Image (tube, rainbow, N blue to C red; front, top):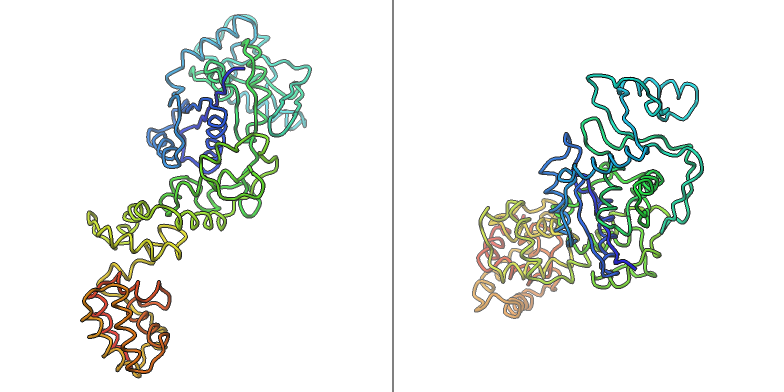
Length: 470
């Protein structure tokens, strides 16, 4: 049995979207599970829309989610001679022919066929052409598809799907500019690259009978096909940009961890019992095609956020701290080239990892701890910063300012001394102090807040709070 060889073959005409990443992931996991080969092929023959920037975005997206390839990236534009050679072979064997029909003629015939309520497919007239070749026209090349019988796809996910050959027309395989069409380029590449399994979205299922006929006409054995169920938005409509971020790199910019997105995507159409959280080695060990669902999968942003918060809580603190720095910069909380103290940064992560679902949320919550001055929520100030607390704050300021070490135990000792002296409860003093120090009513523990702010900022904010007390 030949080793498994699979490929991911994006077209660089836009961003790498979530559906594409899931297709790449399923191919990658299958290859790794079977100890096979994962190939990256860039189908860049749409010269008007394919751009170097889009290619780089694809490469960056795959690298971010950790999908490494064994061969490639291979570019179709570097293989044009190969497609022409295969098209010439079909012409020689009488299985393909030149087509001189213009776009206008084809569109007129399609319109007429639809008006007659007929299938708008090419009528094959150029295959019957005789006489001199029209001058000044660069012909396309069409594959002569059989019009009788059926073509059956033994789909590894959907089961057997049968198509009537009479529904298929003579598709163009080489355009008049010499570039291959999608169906022809994919078949030639998959055959030459010895691809054993084609795993892709089910929007390609209707292409499969045409491709199987091309394989056979060229004398190649078709690979095995598996078509993944569609991804739907929460409204059960096909996932699109209107549902929110669909580009993989948008999730990086929004503060998601790559392992969270990978874990989420593997469960989007594949399952292993009721298990939700998978490390990558465990995915590789358990991934098989027979566990892929046939039904469409619904994208649930809240579940992705839940998974991301799980990974934030359990990820290495130093790694999360390093990842957080660009988000702090974007929030204007760090100078462009400023680098915060690593110990302080890791303390910040520990304080907020339980409260944050994304790195962006963590950076937003970190604002009061990175700024010299803050805005206090007016409603919170009215409720908690009352004149009756002036004596307690007046005692707390020197008590905190004089602690030998601005660490938890010393801060707690100073705090409790003021509580004992004033007769206030911990909550009656801690919540007003929290509002004074952060401007907010919710935060990590009060001593964690003080340690993050440091002595100078803590004392300055408590003094400023006294001025707000009415």
